[in-house]
Length: 392
Ligand SMILES: *Cc1c(COP(=O)(O)O)cnc(C)c1O
Image 1: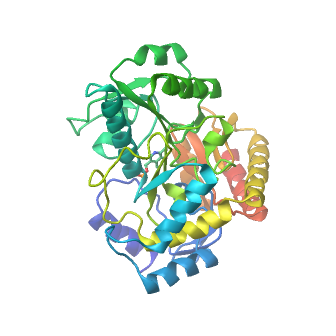
Image 2: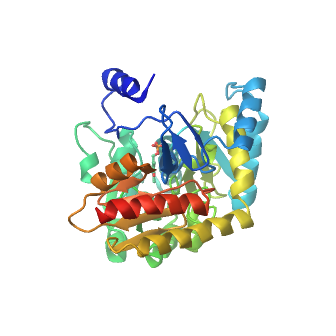
Image 3: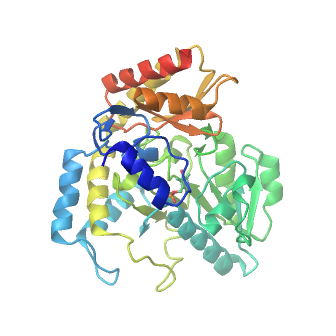
């Protein structure tokens, strides 16, 4: 099928939930994707921060296919080596005690909400089940994670939403203090609000959250679904904020392109969920975990992280040199660029795609989440296209 055939069938048979670009992708290599006609696209998206090692990384694809040939799935009634290896690697590297594996970001956040609520109920009583999250946050698309998301556009149509969420503005320490009462069991935040416009949260505010959670015995949850897996130049973004969350959620990059999510729990929270209290048929799938093990073996590495930070500095420099870009936000290879008022991010992204560059948007900004393995030459090629589009 050619691009048009595929797009026509897509329009006819796939639910209308995505506003797609007129782009069809069939294969890729590193930071370059191709359509059925052979047109190349420089990829500054990595599938929204998922393909952290780029398209079709040879070692990753071998690890995944070897596992598929051996054992593609079993139930969570039995142990398997790949998920044990990934869990061990995550715990040993980060200092967390235990991991629960799921299949997506929203599912990881659902797990974190369960941990915070059960912890609150057991430690402080059955009234203790409110979770505070931030205005302008994004935590997922299930009914509960939509409820946890602090943007009113997400609180439509699907009533009744899950009760027990309360929002404060990022940076508003006084507002936060007022919001904490004896019904609150946890505080859940992103450190850089990704979908909210690549907005970093103030580090003093984050430290204050950690302090309040410690003092009041609340569960401090950090959603690292977009920021984790070395995306921001450290394995987890919280390392750069000088805090130690009780629960961290991850997904997107961890499987290197296969669906996977994880909830990491520290000593305080790792015993909260007991037999039969949580589960997932596909969670810890051996093929996804074989991919994740390969990813972690590569991204949990000083030299790798150093390269991510160098490429980040290079991209920021290139973006700042474009007169139309008003500011650049973000960390590592999670960057946002503010555009002039007469340009909409969606239009710029569409023009970039036409010329062979894939970029994301977040609110009014352009958003860049290239594969962590992107080369300088590929960055240059992408930046030439972006500069051309911005010049108009
Ligand atoms: C993408 C994202 C999610 C949701 O992940 P899914 O895998 O789409 O369910 C949740 N939180 C943050 C911060 C995200 O970026």
